[in-house]
Amino acid sequence: MNNIKRAVTVLAASSVILTAACSGGVTQEKEEQPPTVSLETQAIEIDGVGNARQLGGYVCADGRKIKDGVLLRSAALSTLTDEGAETLADKYHLRYVFDFRTETERNVLPDKEVEGAENVWLPVFTSSLYDDETVAAIMEARKTNDPELAYITLAKHHGLSTIYSKMLLTDEGKKAYSEFFDKLLTVGDGEAVLWHCTQGKDRAGMAAVLLLYALGADEDTIKQDYLLTNDAYNKDRIAGSEAHAAELGLTEDETKEYVGTAIAVYEDFFNTAIDGVKAEYGTVKNYLTEGLGLTDEDITALRDKFLE
Image 1 (cartoon, rainbow, N blue to C red):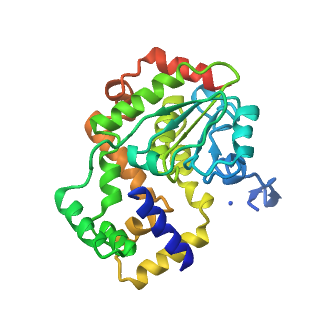
Image 2 (image 1 turned 180 degrees about the vertical axis):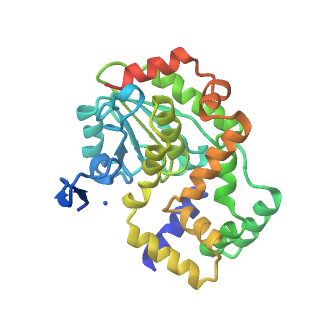
Image 3 (image 1 turned 90 degrees about the horizontal axis):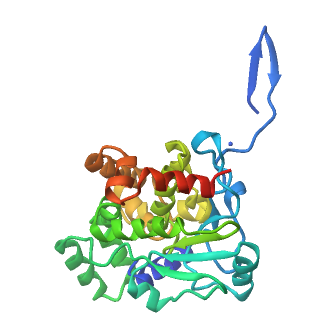
């Protein structure tokens, strides 16, 4: 329950795999291989920062792989320690920190500085993405000074999935992600970048999704990388929050909204975002070019820059 309380507080403060093969009757053991997408291969250590991962190693266009230690993602850097900042500066040679949070989030929990890195503010939300009814219900719940009630109210209005359905398609969202790609094109050899939102899973998650599409990763890899947040934030903790949601009488969809708002991601959220893009643009590639303004030459340049 303490974990749930902490998750609620976070929301309130941030205004929220031995296989065998048979041949000729003989069973042969295959050497066990780690999953292509796993926290073991993607997690990185940045002291004081949660959900810190990299995209290195994923197979993309032309069979090339993403370079290790160059494309980093995480939760906010507000709790970054001096040791963590030194790691980002000295080990990764960080060029940019991309912050997808709102102005309020940045003011309440500002990023710690990383020597040599430029902090680039790219707000995905600059206005409310909720309808008036949802906003009114949440405001009424907040008047009770019970943050969990506001949390439950948002879940019942399917607030997070509403955001996913609009995040990539609003003018604000497209502007933020377009500028993200513009800056990536200026990264030099030996330099790394890091992007984040508050928990490093929704807005930052979609940035990783779009970049992986641009680099030519297959959709299953892209989706599994998105879902790695659930390993990073502890599956037992998520299961506990889901059990608590059941105790509160929330439906399955409401439970996803309730737990997803603070600590988890779900395949439904990914599908909502990508289905929305495909409905409007036909393909994600068309979204990258028509929606974000990337040219074929830009995509080639990104692949040459970040793949090996």
